[in-house]
Image (cartoon, rainbow over all chains, first blue to last red; front, side):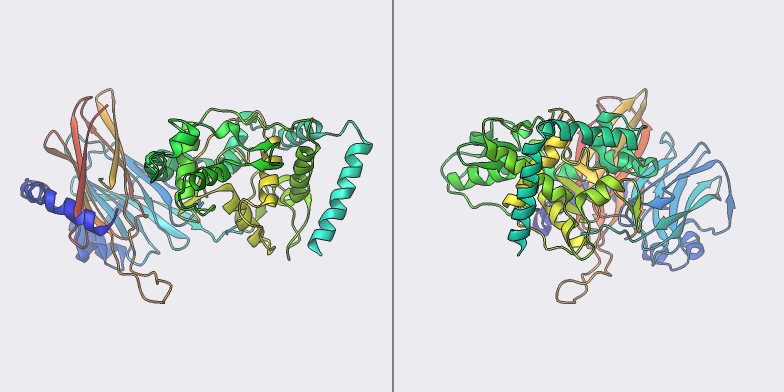
Length: 150
Length: 278
Length: 101
């Protein structure tokens, strides 16, 4: 889709977009350079959630491959049964580790699935904010350069 | 030089075929399928249509995650637009291939009048040119998109390649394709059979090679590596580049005959394109 | 045509949503053929509303793959109206609406 048509659409939905911003909503998940361009995961979490202290928990379920088929498209899934306000994904060795934050309003399942880019073998951490505290689960995802490109 | 070697090898193959009247394509296929069933006893025959994912559970999980919303769906949409677009003369691709283009099972086939193997992509371009439209490049872009749309609508059809017994040229084309498959080439001196048969399921650096059984079922493909759609002939050329061999021309005689052979070997399997692959 | 494709299915009161958003998600680290850096261009915010209420929202950096995929689930039912919108770093926006199946 070219930029012109995107901008036309943008014009058409400006009214709706403004209404969106005006709706009362928890601001944690809103994008900010302050959180998403931080080089250190702890700083990113501090700026995104106002806290950086984390506790590992086996109630945080992180699903990611042991060896990524392709570093450009790595499926990552985070889920928890805890009462969660937010979910985040950190990719340690990426230029800026905070890849995603999501708001979980009441009535929404604490689940998010997406596909991430990983430049090299790295630790992936799922973060769940529950009761004001941060809980995590981590695993290493290996990224290799294959033998059969072309 | 290449042509001389080819013709000599060709002749040798021809000799062996006529000398042993039992060893024909049907027997080749039987032996081919049996090889993979024995090598991968845990893989149901139908599942070979899924390439390396039929033999590698860890990769399969990632593939299934991608299949939740595969990138080739965008290609199918683009393909549908192209398929339904009216030509300058008022016709469209639908005039050649029917309302939904579900013609995958008709290709590849031996065309007796022209004495050559017809593939779906070649037919698409011939339809365009016959109607005064510009032909498409064969490896990616619009051709891959349109092929994705037609293949998607053809899902469930089975590969049913025939080698008509009343035309010895058809058998010759099959034999040339077979020779392409088994001939070592390139600086790395590999044949298709080396990676995809003899060592199928083993690793080359960080890649596991897929079994050749099922290779023809799932095209065109969205390859993560390409971050775009590509046709079977794009992959043939890519593989040849990988082993540092000069690739043949897309939709040239060599790749069409190779497609003829590889498809025949997978007769009976379901067409399940377009697909997502590593 | 919208850049957003949505699949939303009612599974016993929990609506399973899968969406694919066509977007380059340029990291700003790539160079074009002439060696010039391709500027960063990525979706920053995504919001999902059902029947006028925000049911999910998230923010991305450029670690999210090209043509971002997002899946989530919210309490809802067949026939609900679901709208997904995004905003990228240039201020451009897009949205798509569908009915839960």
